[in-house]
Length: 181
Image (cartoon, rainbow, N blue to C red):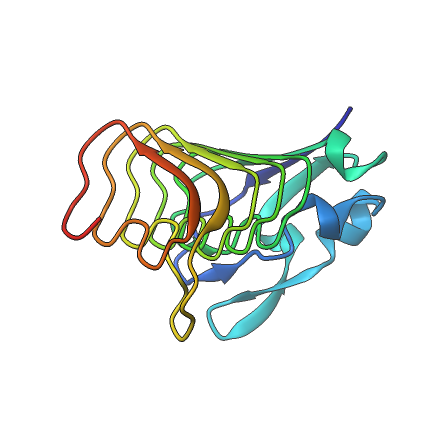
């Protein structure tokens, strides 16, 4: 088992697209290569090392890699996008589109998550210890198929239209859901 830890260095003020944060895109890369990868912060590209301290390694196959992201990530987007294996562990609040188009693996959020959690999800497991926003497991704008497999567990409350256009899979909410689940 190998582990890559990203610890947030500063407060994020503009939306940051972190769709590269999944095992499928990181396995086998060196820490320096990951640190120098570029992501969008607002309307400009920045290196990942300007946002996070990066330590650990990603050797082995994707099923044996754990990606741990620490800090308030409520302004981020697309963590775990399209992931197929391994574990992504967010220690803090997560942003929107977490686990979008996820096909496998496990995504854990220790805190709240934003809207569109698990949208277009095909497989895998997402667990959120806090609350979530709207459209959990729903179809992305312009599509007619939401979640078609996998499992989402929310320990807190969920927003509106949870499971909109969902075809299969399971969403469990321990708290309350807003309108139109």
